[in-house]
Image (cartoon, rainbow, N blue to C red):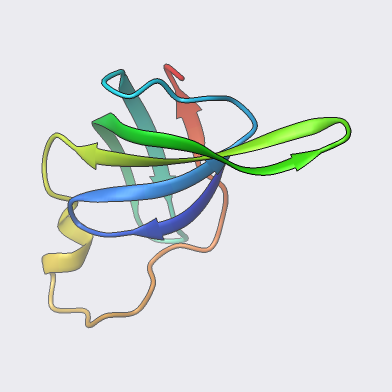
Length: 89
């Protein structure tokens, strides 16, 4: 799973598996100095790429609570540069 966009209220992710709208998911987010496990619900999912051997899906996830990384006064830098580990998808 690849993180496309992240905000305090949710995430946009791309994966090789379809995500069912309304399903509950858990994302583990990690940077060099921060770690968070966020629960949320899939709002929507659509096909974004079709290749001969694979299909890629893009899904929007709304978190159950706000991700505190954006409220610590650190500015607007992107706090992520890695992969997302999906649980429950």
